[in-house]
Each structure stands twice: as C-alpha cells, then as structure tokens.
Image (tube, rainbow, N blue to C red):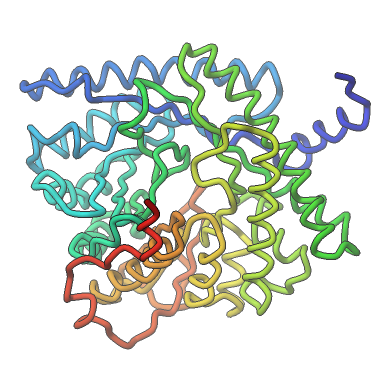
Length: 452
C-alpha cells in the first residue's frame, strides 16, 4: 500500500499540533485466581499479580511511545469487580485493606488509576455489596489510585433504586473526608456498564473475559476541531463525512499501537474505545468542537443536535476502521475536565438541566460536575436516578460522577488540579422528590427488553 507525503504530513500534524494521543492503555486483570481463605495470602497474591503485570505494561508502553512518537498519556489497570472476589472477606476493614494493597501495587509500578473496586447490583445486592458501599468513603478518601463503580441497572434488569438510595449519603460522606470532594471524582454510578471500558472511573475486568485483556482508549478532540474549522461551509451531511473520515484515521492509529502493545505483553487485544475525551489542555475541548460547528456557546439551542451529529460521525468512522470497537465509544462531555464546558457553565449558557438533555445523545452522562455541598442526599439520589433512567429506557450506557463540595454554593469555582481541572458549582432545583425516590424498589425494565 502506497502512502503519499500528504498523509505523512497529516499524521505528524495530528500528533505535533492537534493533541492527538492514546489517552489510555488499560490492562484488565482477572483476580478470581487470587482468592484465598487466608486474607493475608489473598492480599499478597493480589499485590504480586497487579504489580508484576503493571510494571510490564508501563515498560512496554514507554517503548512504543519512543518508537512511534505518539504519547500514551495514562497506563491503567482494571480488575475483576472487587465484591465478587471479596465475598469471603466482606468486612469494612477487609475492603479497606484490599484497597490499600491495590493502591500500593499500582503506585509502585507507575500506574495512574486502578478501576474495578465496585459491584454489579443492577437487580439486587449481596451482603458483600452493601458492605462495599459502606466502605467507599474510606476507600475513596484514603487511597490515591483506586476507582470505584456500581452498575445499578440495565435495559434488561431495570434500575435498582434501593442501591441508588444509598449513594447520596455515601457521596456526601466521601466529600467531607477528601479535599474539595475530590474523592467523589473516583466514583461513578452506571447503567449498562460495558465490561471492556478502558476509561476511569468505570473500568473493570469483565467476568466473561480471559485472564488478561488490553483495552485502548484513544482521543482527538483537537484533531476533530481542526478539520471542522477547515470546513466552515459544509452542510451537516458533508460535515458528518469529514468527521467520520477523521475518526477513521485516529481509530486506525490507536488500534495499531494497541495491538502491538498487546502482542509485546503476551495478552489478548480487547477493544479500541474511540471516545473523544477532553482534557484541561488548551484546544483539547469537546465543547470547542461543538462551538466550531456553529454553536456560540455549548448549552445554547442546537447543542443537542450538534452533539448527536458528532457522536454519530465518530461511531461510524470508528466502526469502519476496526472490527474491535468497544467500551463506550463516542463523546465525553465532563464539565471540570473541559475548559469550554467550564466556561459555558460560568457564562450561564449550560445548566444542569441542559447538560442532562445532552446526555441523551452523548456516550456517557452527567460527568464531573459540582453541586452545593448542602444539597440533600435524596436530591443527589434523584439526580443520579434521572440520568440512569435515560440509559435504561434508551438501551445505552449512562453514568454520573457528581461532587457535592462542602461549603460551596452555586456560582463558586473549585480548583481540583491536574487532569481533573476546575469544577464550577451548578445550581440544583430546590424542589424535593424525597417521597418519590424514597419508595425504593426497582424501576421495571422497558418493554424493549423482551427481545427474545
């Protein structure tokens, strides 16, 4: 296959000037074979298995960065959902000690985050699941790298409101124990959670996977924004084609790097997740893409259509590029991690209600947004339930990462630092739904679940 000089220049430009990178390589690790009736031996096995494989992941990823000149921003681990392997040691003390063991193993190896400290509770909770939830304020505030998740529903099972109703108080307690509620940034509530998601905080190693799987998350908001700005006169059909071709190119590049890394590690290649994931870097903004499309500020009328166009084109381009597309694959719209989203909130263009509307067509959901610390726990539960209901009914993954920041009110800006950025505190509807969400039970699965 011949490659002309324009293609070489285009690829180099993506890397050098448009912030194209491999956002994460995430190695999934099965921990079921580490289970031991002796908790000390159990922890030692987990530490050894994570540490050994994590060090190899970091070393091989750094070799590929040097070889190809493409930055691999994060090297991460995902593990079997922890409640499954901890059934025989399900005390708060044991969960905390296991979290510290995992945190230590990851830190020693140079891993940024470990996902999977969570549970699948879409239809009910075991005793271990409840104890896990009770332990999360300690786990999230006292470890640096451990990320937690709960899959609270699915389009087949419905939504477990009894589990959702445990979250408001858990998050408020976590926020109180960590600086600027940053511990809450490591917890995500989900429905229809994919088992091969490489992104945090929702990554975990699925129970249907083998011992190891390498999943790759690529990103390129700057690349997409650049091509959009060069095609200002296109109609929506033509614009979709431009974005689709660009998504094809960045997906191919990401998969090639991922497959070589998996081969070097001697593990199965899992999937490439082609989600556009913003960062706090200038020009690396999904909101910036939407505004380049012709929306004055994200949140203005037309924003939902623009996000729908972007997500559809990205998915189609990625699907053409690879037979191993998975994870979430689309577009993330976190607030604090995207400078354009932060500015839209501060300017009054983007409200919590409009953000929820955007999630009906984006990849994930209400992500990395702040609310006043005095928001009642039942209101937090209702915000989470509203978002997750969108996923259950529409047969898509939706999720919530919310920071109820103590002592802060709507309009304040809280500096989290690093990749987490700055979180503006959003106004929350002051009217209560306590009596409704307090009913508990389970939202029945939609009729579309009866597909057999």
